[in-house]
Amino acid sequence: MSEKFVDIIAAISSSKNVIITGHIMPDGDSIGSTLALGLALEKLGKKVTMACPDAVPESFLFLPGADRIHCGVPKNDEYDTIFVVDCSTPDRVGEEMQELLNGNITVVNIDHHINGVQFADVSYVDSSAAATGEIIFDLLDELGVIDVDIAINLYAAILTDTGSFRYEATTSLTHRRVAKLLEFGINVSRVTKHLFDEKPLEVFMVLKQALKNLYISKCGRAAWISINWDELQKIGAKDEHTRELINYPRSIKGVKIALMFREPSPGLVKVSIRSNDDTDVSKIAAEFGGGGHKRAAGCLIEGDIETIKEKVIEKVLKVLD
Ligand SMILES: [Mn+2]
Image 1: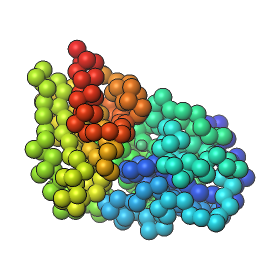
Image 2 (image 1 turned 90 degrees about the vertical axis):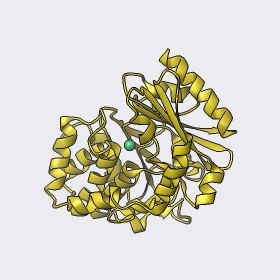
Image 3 (image 1 turned 180 degrees about the horizontal axis):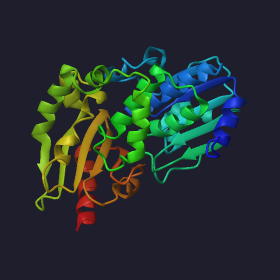
Image 4 (image 1 turned 60 degrees about the horizontal axis):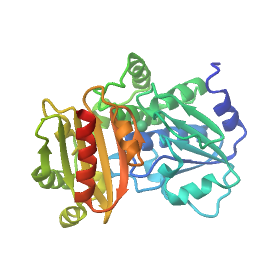
C-alpha cells in the first residue's frame, strides 16, 4: 500500500456516518467526485449522505447516484466525518455546510487547487492532478472498490475538468487513469452525449444574448463576455446554463486572458478568468477574494456588474502590460 493516503484511509476506517460535499455552483468534478467517493464508502459499509450546497445541474443528473445527492445539509443526522472534495477554501461549501465544518466532526479535504487554505483535520491536496477525480481514482483504486458506476462518475469528473483532455493540466497520468476507468466498461458515447451533446435550449438562448456583450481590448490580448441577472431572468435561464460562455472570448486568436462576468443572483457577480499563456490568473482572482488554478480561476464579488467589469478588466490590462 502506498503511503500517500494513510491518513485518509485511517479517517475512512474510523468513520461510520459520513457526509460528502463539493462546492457551490457545482461542476462535473465536484459532482463526479462526490458521487464516486460516496458510492465507494457505501460499498465499504459506511452510512453515506451525499450533498451539494446547490442543486445538481441538469447535465449531470444522468450520473449514477445523482438522484441521491441532497441539496443542502440534511437535518437531524449525526455525522462523524465530512469529506469535502474539490474545495480550496471552507467557504466554497456554502454557509450552511460551513457550519457543519465547525462542529464536532472530522473534516477530510481532497482537492487539486493551488494556494488553498488549510481547514481540515486531514488534507490531501495535489495541484498536479487535473481534477479532484484523479486523486479520488488513485484512492479508490488502492482500496479496490471501483465498479462501473464509480468509474462513470470519475470519468465525468476528469473529462469535464480537463476540457476533454484539452487543458494544460492534462498529463500522461490523466490518460493512464482514464484508460483504467474505461476497462470497467464505460459507455463513452452515452456519457459524452449527456455531458456535451445534449444541451438544454436555455444554453443557446443565453449564448445568443451574451454574444451581444462579447468585447475585445484594443491590444487584442484580453476579451470578455457577460450576462446579467435581468437578461437571465428574461430567458428563464439558470446559472448552470452560462458555464460554456467563457469558451468564446477564450478561443479568439491572440487573446491571452479571457473573462466571463455573470450575475447568478441580483448584485452578486461571478467572474471567471482563463489564461491562454503563462499568466497566472489565480493571482488576479486572489486580488478580488477568489482563487483557482494558474490557467483557470474565479471570484465572487458583490456590487454592480458594470462597475465590477471595469475594475477587473483594468487589473487584467495592467497585468498584461
Ligand atoms: Mn476540480
